[in-house]
Every structure is written in C-alpha cells, then in structure tokens.
Amino acid sequence: QWEAAYAPGHGGMVHLFEWSHAAIAEECEKMLGPKKWGAVQVSPPTENRLVGGQWWERYQPISYKLENRSGNHQEFADMVRRCNAVGVRTFVDVIPNHMCGGGGSGTGSGGTFFDAGSLDFPGVPYSRNDMNDNNCYTSSGNIENYGDANQVRNCRLVNLIDLNQGTEYVRGKLVDYLNQFIDLGAAGFRVDACKHMWPGDLDVIFGRLKNLNVRSGFKGTERPFIFQEVIDQGGEPITANEYTGFGRVTEFKYCMGVGSNTNSLKHLANIGPDWGYLSPMSSVVFVNNHDNQRGHGGGGHVVTFEESWALKTLTTFMMGHDYGEPRVMSSYYFSDPDEGPPGWQPNGFNGGFGCENGWVCEHRWRAIQNLGMFRGSVFGTGVTKWSEGWDNQIAFSRGNKGFMAINGGSSNWSGSIATSMPDGEYCDLGQGDPTDGGCTGPTIRVSGGQAQINVPTGDSPVSYISVSYTAT
Ligand code: LM2
Ligand code: CA
Image (cartoon, rainbow, N blue to C red; front, top):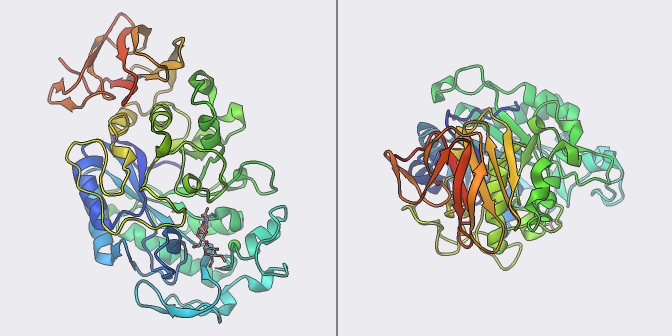
C-alpha cells in the first residue's frame, strides 16, 4: 500500500480541493490526462454535516453515502471512470476517525437524519456504543494535552464525535466505507487525522481492503495506495514513524524545510532522511496543503500561491527530486480561513495558465503544468549531476531520463550545465508544450554531457526536459 498504481509515463498527484466530481472528470480529460499527471486527490465525497458552507464542514461525516456539494454517487462513479480512462488515478479523502461535531441534530448533505446529541447516525448505522467517549478520561471529553497519546486517540478532536476503531463492528463499517471506493475504481486514500487513531487498528482496517478493481483496468494484484495524515513536526509522543508499516505518511516537516530555503535552493540537495524526515518510500511530500495554507493543521510558515515565485521554484524542485511521493495543492482564493469555495466551478482547461473567478489552479501554471510529464518519464531513476549557479540556481539530472534547471536568481541563467542525458534536442517543458515531434516554446540541446540552458527569471523561472519529449 506504498506504491501509487500510476499509469506508465504518469507521475505526481494534484489535490483539486473542493472541485466537483463533474469538473474533475473534465479536468482529467482535458488537462491531467494529456499532461500525464498520476492522480487526483478529491475532497471528501461522503455525506457531511451542513454547518454553513465552510470548507471544513466536509470533515464532519454523517453517513458514507456519496452525496454533498461535489456531487452524488453517479457523478463520483463517472469521474473515476473517466479519469482512469485517461490514465489518471483517483485518491479519496476519507475520515475514519470521527463523525460530526457534538450537539444538535438535523439532516446531512444527502438528506440523512442524525442526532449528534445522542450520538445516533442511523445512515451507517452507528450509535453511542460505537463511540470512544467511554475511553476518554479528560474532563471536557476533548483532547486537551498532545503529550498524552491516550487522549489524542480516544478523546474528541475539536469536539468531533470519536469513533472506536477497536471494535469489530466499527472496523467492518470502515472497511465497507473504503471498499465502496475501490469497487468504483479508486486507487487509494488520503486518510484524515491518523494521529488520532491507534496504529494497530489502522493496520487491521487497511489490511482488509480489497485489491484494486480489475474491472477498472487494474491488474488484480495492486493494493490501494494509502497515505495517512499525521502531523508530526516533532515534540510529541506520537510520531509519523508509528504509521509507516501499513502505508505512507504525510511528511509535514518538508513544508517547512523547503519553505525556509527559497533563497538558498542549494541547501535542498539532500532533503530527506538526512534532515530527520521519513524514508523516501514512506513519505508523501508537499509544499503546502489545504490546512496549512490557511493556518489550520499545524500552521507554521509555508509557501503558498501568494508567494507565487517561490511556489513555482519549490514545486518544480519537489516534482523533480527523488525524495517522497509529491502532491501539488490546487487552491481557491480566500480572505477568511473558514471560507468555502466559490459558488461556481473552475472554467475548463483550454491550454491557459490558471483559472478565473476565484480559483487559483496552481497545477495549470506555466511552470507547473508539465511537471506530471516530467515526473512520469523519470520514474525509477535517482538524482545525478547536481550543480549550482552563483545566484540561487540549481540543476540536476534524473539519470539518463531527465534534467531540470531552476532559476531562483534575479536574472537569466544561461550556459552549459553537466547532465547525464543523452545527446539530443528536447522540448523545454517549463517554457512550452510538446507537439508531435516539436515544441511550442524553446528547446534545449544536449551534447557530450552538457545541456545548453537559458532559464528566464519571472513568470516561469524553470526549465525541464525529458527523453520522452524530444524536438527535432
Ligand atoms: C485534521 N487533522 O487531523 C485536519 O488537519 C483538520 O484541519 C481537520 O479539522 C481535522 N483533521 C478533522 O477532520 C477541520 C478544521 C476544523 C473543523 C474540523 C471539523 O480544521 O476547524 O472544526 O475540520 O469540521 C470545526 C470548527 C471547530 C468545532 C468543530 C466541531 O472549526 O471550532 O469544534 O468544527 O464542531 C468545536
Ligand atoms: Ca480517535
């Protein structure tokens, strides 16, 4: 459950935060598929409590029925099928730790009744006995001290009604919850709030999941790709390492690591275990996520779309480097950190470099949009021929498959840089798009182990080439 079952030539995942299933299906066909991204991470598709339209209401499950503002069951199924058809996998954001916030009653986004006062969720069904309240010994019933692993796992996280994953009944319901996505062709899961569940329980639950669905085009032997959200920035008894035995784990230290080196990119050469991070096979890495870009989930200074120049250089580095499985955040603009998405969906991709009407669409930016192609084409190689310019500039190869140069300086970076790429003329994927045998932008010539680069500064301060995209 550590390997993403990406289609050959595809790589990297994009989190299309708050996109509807219908808009994601279209993005797969027009953008993510053609540009060979590996997967899309989708917002929680299950029925949630309606609080007031905030983004976080979707982290309050009411039932495991697929119906909320992203769409319904049929639209979800259609999205997964259409994305798979163009080689893009679906990773589902799942929330096995809890149900909705305590108190009150009502109907969820799918019309299902619940009573959060008496802990009754007939849509699953779950009732009082399935909850952890009796295993929590804090006076408020909430997590009060992150220094006590017991309460972090058995008490309520911000008053969210905590499920007891230790019981057979709850385990069975959670396995069914996740398996329904595998049946529909999904290839993996982003698992919310894993710090708040016992590793032994997760091991059992993930172990019972089905193999990926043969009818969706998988081989029948592939396991779902699991990446667990564990916010470990050090200083607490619970560590990310407790969770690496049954899936990958989000490496939050990476956000701070890259974010504090935007003006010294050369320091990133050996980012990874040397920095006290998880092993490469255990980690999912990202420059920012939907939580920390708005001060939730750990916080700390992270680079977001608001620092667009740094986001481009760091995202290119992350997608090019061989440490961890990378995820690119795709956002909407907000002024209030609780604010939900715009009331309409992003415009369809037409070859441009962003979205309009409130959506940021970092994954469509000129510097970033072809990184899926690059990542997919260098699979199986390591970083070679690391080199540095004098003005915050770095370049490296991925064996004989790819080469990239990142210009964090204040003027063009041009000259001859050593590379392990074979001789040839390649499309500069950071500056233009490959066409049949050509390129809409500049090319980079490699001869005798030297790449002739000319990396601009400004809008797209990166150049990257791959043996799969030649221009002659
Ligand atoms: C996570 N980590 O384990 C995310 O990092 C975190 O952002 C999620 O909380 C959390 N899991 C639960 O899925 C988000 C958001 C919270 C929000 C919850 C539930 O960051 O602010 O809490 O989702 O929607 C909200 C209110 C909070 C209230 C709670 C329950 O902000 O004040 O607590 O609902 O009613 C009384
Ligand atoms: Ca818990």
